[in-house]
Amino acid sequence: MTKAERIASLIAECTMFEVDPCSDHYVMGRVIGSGAFSIVRVATQKQTQLKVAAKCIKKAMLDVHEMNHPNVIKLHAVYSEPDMFILITEFVEGGELFDRIVDKTFYTEREARDVVKGLLQVTAYCHAANIVHRDLKASPYDDASFKLADFGFAQRIDLSKSHLVTQCGTPGYVAPEVLRGKAYGNGVDIWSIGVITYILLCGYPPFHNDNRNALFQQVKSGTFEFHSPYWDHISDAAKDFIRLMLTVDPNIRYIVPW
Image (cartoon, rainbow, N blue to C red; front, top):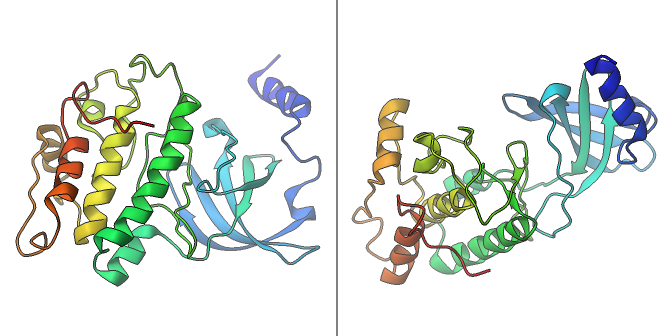
């Protein structure tokens, strides 16, 4: 049996896939996002006129984890097309969290606390299921809650050990051990939450350089500052919280007590 035949056989046996073509049920609209292996379009369900998001993923790169949590974008259906999978998810009107930060300049500590609380809760949900997300960043956000999306790099592992070695993630959010090519575990998600918290409170990232190699050197050394006057009004407790998560050594990095 060829690889293509094996994939077709697995799809036929899997109950998560819809039987009919996606075009029988949804009208595809404009592209609202894209990545290395996928694009996201606005789509409309023909029968109900419900607006949804359709994530189109190259078949070779599909790595889907069905999650059921209020802070995870809901997956409605999965279609297998000739050259891709199409994931139909809820449509989040609010856009990217980073865009909200740009519009607001920065969040107050109270506002940031609420967003980070939702992020910690959904990360706890993932880790309890032995899933490391590996690409936490300023994700889609609506008026009600933080919504975690894009599980393309997520992996299920034994979290009591450090099994992962693949270098992946988003520059600026990725943990130092990933860049060093060392085995790592769920501590990489904690590092990313530290980066997000920093951005929420001041409006800019802790690690930034137009030269990617220089950026990665900053990350690997864990070199960042709380610049005046942007951080003068931020509490020492908030700064300590960030320092604990942005600790280079994953063995002593703060692990949130789930």
